[in-house]
Amino acid sequence: MKCTKCGKEAVAEIKYAGIALCREHFLSFIDRKVKREIREQVHFNRNDRVLIAVSGGKDSMLTLYQMSKIFGKWRNLELLAVTVDEGIGDFRVNCSRVAHKFADSLGIEHKTISFRDYIGITTDDVARVDKELAPCTYCGVFRRKVLNIYAKEVDADYLVLGLNLDDIAQSVLMNVTRGDTPRLARMAPHTKRREGFVPRILPLRKVLEDEVRLYVTLTNIPYYPKRCPYAPLALRDTHREFLNNLEKKDPSVKFSILRFLDDVKPLLEEKYMAQLHPCKICGEPTPQDICKACQLEMRYHTLSKGGQWPSESRGW
Ligand code: SF4
Ligand SMILES: [Zn+2]
Ligand SMILES: [Zn+2]
Image (cartoon, rainbow, N blue to C red; front, top):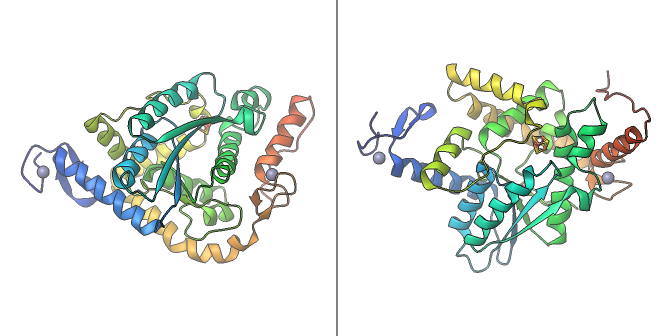
């Protein structure tokens, strides 16, 4: 297979675009895609502080690298990085070590914060106590909350997440199959600033997981290669498999899902985005009286004392 652009040996076949690319052209193809995407999502101002959430996995490490490559020399933009330790054995501790070293090498200040410190409960705690809900249900909700609180603590204007196109297409599908339209409406990137909520930017939004993998391999970007031990319990894996099978027949299916989201989001935002207000317990923005994280905390504490908690209801 030869590069469509220069005729050299190709390292990647980009099926959705009908091209093949050599190492050099593949890297610049991704670089351009990321730059364009950031430009579409945000216009940074002088003295903006930008917090990058780094799990230590390949996606967030590529995000950190790209942010440093694009904005590292901007004198008026400050880049910071954070890893959230969810308390999953020593999994995230190992991830965080890799993230810290890489951030350091790029000259970006990096800090690790934990569920233990911010919520008082770890993902291992909930996995032990709650036999009905998958640990990821707690973990994802707690992480969103902790990141938003921390971003406000460090006065960040934006929060950058390393989600790739596969992650986003899976989330759209999960929200659709759960009938969770409000969550679909609230999906990042956030173009409007809302009280109490740090807008989220997704530079890898149009980069497939396979492309991320190839990019970090070709450029030797370090990352922690193991998966979270709870990942196989997540519903997300079913959607991942479904989409990957569909992609074999339709290489652009994940892009089509993204386009669907971009088309319907402005309409959904009108209906659902006006309803955020401070949680009565913790003050974080929520569409309900009590935010999902506080509800889950109450559920955990009830179950851990041997009490009962009603099954998750979807309202029918
Ligand atoms: S796979 Fe689930 S439990 Fe593991 S870090 Fe991700 S959300 Fe948390
Ligand atoms: Zn080439
Ligand atoms: Zn709350």
